[in-house]
Length: 431
Image (cartoon, rainbow, N blue to C red; front, side, top):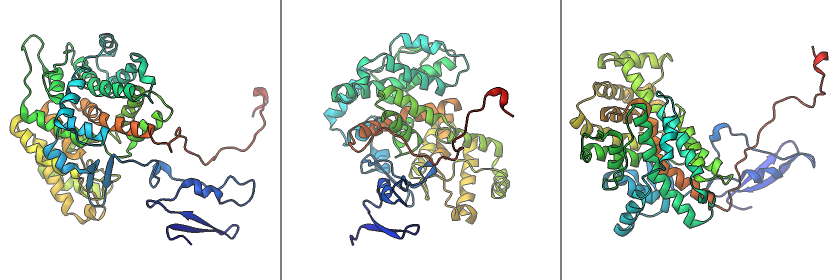
């Protein structure tokens, strides 16, 4: 009997089957052989929300939720946060290796060439209602890019694919800035390729048209935003990455695939969590009110937003990094009074057996919203910032899926719970 195998006895038939184990998994298709007879379809696995199902093999991001570990291509997130930039990290996530100095310079030069979007897209953005949500505008405009580039359909041509990667990374910040400016009733700013990737984005957001010749981003805030982008670059097979892979598996072009991933991120259970944290902190109102709120959470009356994670059963490593970065931001912007409430909430929760036993530790959303707000972003832009940063990860997941020979068009099975065959009844005879 093979050592790395699973023996399964079907008590319905008395038959025993040997199923190979590889990488801690069994193949679901190996269960199909387990049947009660010739007309039996065979066993399937039932796993709502993919709680314990691996849908792919991936070399991009590694997470050990129990130990609080996050690595991109083998590099600990703590080291990348301390030494890397978002552009360098994006290169790593997409291409598999850190770039040389020459490769990084070329990467930045190529991306800067793609910052500008077609002028017609401005008219498209202008068509949105004045109070349209920036995330809805981003989803729509990214999808619209598909109509501008015919070679985007040539997804198995490496040269054409690289063009789309550069275009997406270059143009998503511009479209995000347009969404922000439109929501503020401000004219759109052209990109400034002389600035860094993040600095250019900040300029398109906040440059005062006609009032200054060139925008100079505050270096502390520029680094903080760059850091947040690094922390959000990828996060394994989350909801939006799964959407990117599922849509991309039909061989849709990368623009509509990214639009689909962004639409998944738009949901409050995925990309909107940091906005919910701010709502909670405002509802608490003061540091003195924290114990009372904690009591209500334990009684099941309220939810503790920004704590706990589907994957992490330890302190989210990204939350530790952001917590430290928050102080440098507040030294520039002034202290956000909500920070004192957040710190007290964290202190009490981490010392309370109720939360510790349930492994409810602060996640990345607990502090990121405080930083974004301090920098001047409205809450409606939080998920847009998340999408901008995650574009690199989505692209990496999409490309890896395309080149994986085991992957086919995504189509999960179902357990049918509807009616058996029924005869049609004419409308005048129905009761």
